[in-house]
Image (tube, rainbow, N blue to C red; front, side):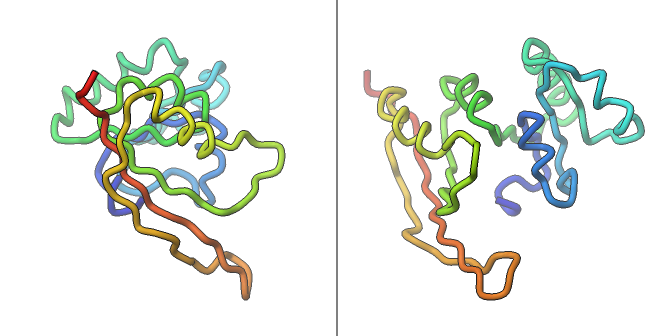
Length: 154
């Protein structure tokens, strides 16, 4: 993820942004979607890498950013409502499926995997199961990287 999204624009929901353990990711511009952007803006007033906005203004903000930084790529980073809103605009999906249950949270990976066929995405690459160490001693987390392209066949 770090390598793939370096020097890019990230679109994400407020909960996803707040879940970043160390705050905004270095070397990336964050466009954070929330129903109440004015509530969060004061905390980032001096930060030119974080923009809070409502869903209706995202395309405008990303368009302005791309005028200033035309070489940047745009990544949609979640949560599930944000994925749902942008899935039809995506050409390539880079999914990391993590084998961790999140209590009281939607299963975003399950949503995407079930809906990819309906949106005509075809899997082109899979890493197979990988294992990473977690935050705690002895904690092992299974994950898998999968890449999908939107099919041009109607």
